[in-house]
Image (cartoon, rainbow, N blue to C red; front, side):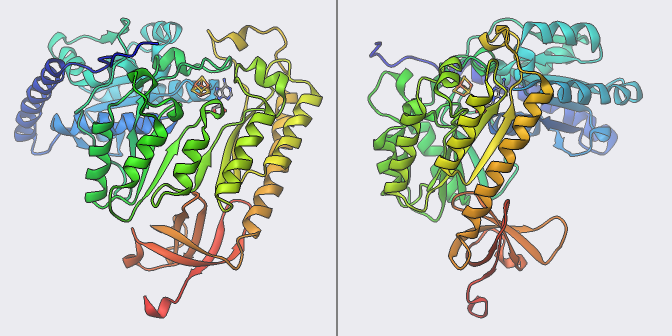
Length: 481
Ligand code: 5AD
Ligand code: SF4
């Protein structure tokens, strides 16, 4: 085991280099703004997970620093970036269809720059696909090159032809990239990037590289800053946060990081995702239980309730070990909200093994699950297995899984009727202005009658009704404010 601290960071010189490109593009955009009377606009489309959302906030931050106004209107933009996802086939199809839809915008505006980045375009066959079939894509780069966005965009302007950055990059940590946060209340903070686990179905280790942790000082500084700016809910992100620090060769682990973050004064919640059950330690659960700010919410993907399938998935735990962690969480934090990810229709999954997953759901009693139909990913070991399950059988299992979980979710939400929960208020709901929504510490959505002054506040809500997917209530002692 390497004990020396590895230098996993993009060098200061390289980051300075990128700042120079930012300034060069900014000067160009300011000149264009003077001539046309308005700043050029950039549209950034994000597909996929929270990690991608966090990456897109960096793309927006860099675009803004380069003098673009961020817009939600692609047809008014001079720069369109599509940040893609590769986790399942559906996500890739969606990305390709979105890229296809932007073609006509290019026909109307030849100066429009269209870029594609993210997990999908780290895969060689997709890079070739885009090169051949989407000739109007000007810019292409993978997850390792996000911090080089200004340089690549500048190259595109200079060369006047497409810049396809498909060379193998080293996966490093880039500190100091400008970030433009989408939400004023809830923020993402990456604590590490990449994954070493190679679950047999998963593309992530191939498209996001090996695990690399940010240094704790940078994370603590970012969280402190966010709390000072008034952020109330901060989610620490990583493909497997429980591995935090292992690559730095120090004994300081994720539980230590949580304990140190918890000491930052203020009124806020800390969430984290995702945890791998094989690395979820009692120490981590103890830190959560005794903390002030760490939300009592555990997202712990189980994937399957069958030991044979878990082994074929290369998950490196048994159902018994998994349930032992859940029992310990509930012993220490009886009101903890526990959520999970489940895959159905993994190659070779028998009816009995699927039934084991249903039984596991009844035993685990998750508050909520994210369920997925297995999707073969080119290059992963599971995609090579001969015993793929027919799509109609996968769908049947998926429906049965949802039915089982919906009953459990309903029961768990009904249990909250009559309780008073702390809720962070987001604002009016989409459909009815007087109905506000917010989330509990465990991430459950709550609807109640609210007022504009409640936005961004922690409220005590008396829960009147629990449904399968939401809670309904009213603000406690509304007359006292
Ligand atoms: N097919 C279906 N679901 C997948 N996931 C990851 N890879 C695949 C795949 N190939 C699911 C896992 C993971 C979640 C983020 O996505 O459940 O926890
Ligand atoms: Fe994929 Fe497994 Fe890594 Fe999660 S832990 S990102 S499922 S390989």
